[in-house]
View 1 (spheres, rainbow, N blue to C red):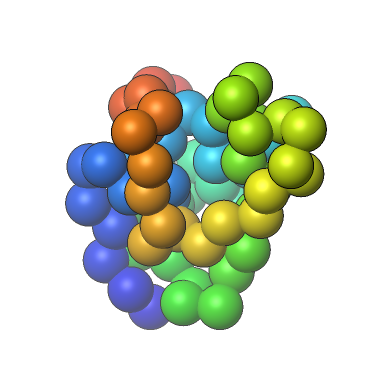
View 2: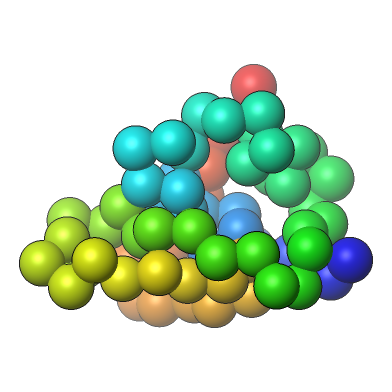
Length: 69
């Protein structure tokens, strides 16, 4: 497991694209821990045309903090 910090994709509302409310992604946001080889789609509208896939450790200027349930 790797630790996720604010500013990284694993803590971003766009991480997981349309599946951002899946239980696995919710657990990452709660625990700030993720598998290092996990890859999810980026739901940031600016990246939609690229079908970008990112790891929880990735990051960009479009970071929006995810709300934790």
